[in-house]
Length: 315
Ligand code: UDP
Ligand code: MG
View 1: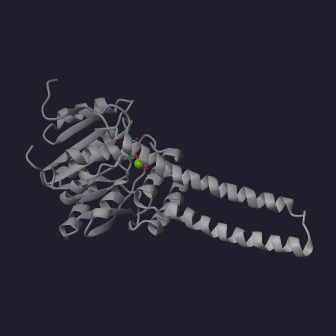
View 2: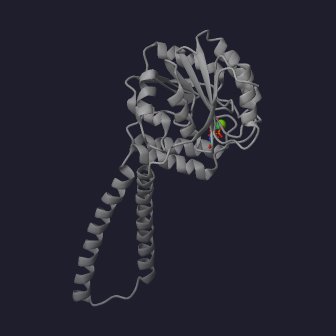
View 3: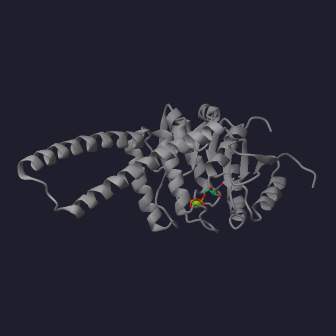
């Protein structure tokens, strides 16, 4: 395979139900672009028949297909990072395996790139087939991220995105373990743009993200791109200390002038519990950063590759 113009990276985790439909639409959509392309699937430790399906497909289209096989489940973003590391194309497009991002829209992203943009984000025209709370949570988190980081993305959750070779190379230089690729790419982009893309319901199977995994991912985004959560607690702590200092002075004067007071015990409980909650949340935020530092200093590999299926193989 000589350097293709386009690398398409697709992470796959337990997607046996949807892979046949994906192959049936993705290859024709890419062939229709009439440019040399390569397709990189990353099997992220699937425990179903995904790997067998990918291997079969790789043999069928060995001219353009590679499969990176992870030796365990390392998560969507690490899978995509492996795709970045192995991509040879002048441009790179990421795509979910579940057909929520229609492969026919890739051309639209590339056309936008032709206008001179190096990083193309996408906005889902409408979220189809996702649970309602995910739409609300996603919009709320979008707003929080918009305010706390310097990253401007209308729709952070859509993974149908295109990157120039310069951005791919920049991301490949990053060593961080847990990251959020669209945000990382955005921080390197000189001239980013966004296009509206169609969004579909998952073609088959179910979402691989539990509420817990979504919360973890959003912590990666917040801690990876902003120190504001820490600053909120240090500034808030200073403010609370000042206010409590005033309260102590007031109570001392009151005690001298009017005598001791015993009422308001439960108000006191209320205030103490509230402040305890604030403290625990602060320690938690600190822990999110410290835990990540710990992971970084241990410097274990981000992922382990068991094998790479490429070219024509012996049956
Ligand atoms: N995925 C992955 N590893 C994981 C979880 C997900 O490679 O640990 C892949 C999954 O196969 C899919 C993409 O990431 O191609 C997005 O996952 P999903 O559609 O479940 O997320 P949602 O659309 O619900 O946010
Ligand atoms: Mg999906």
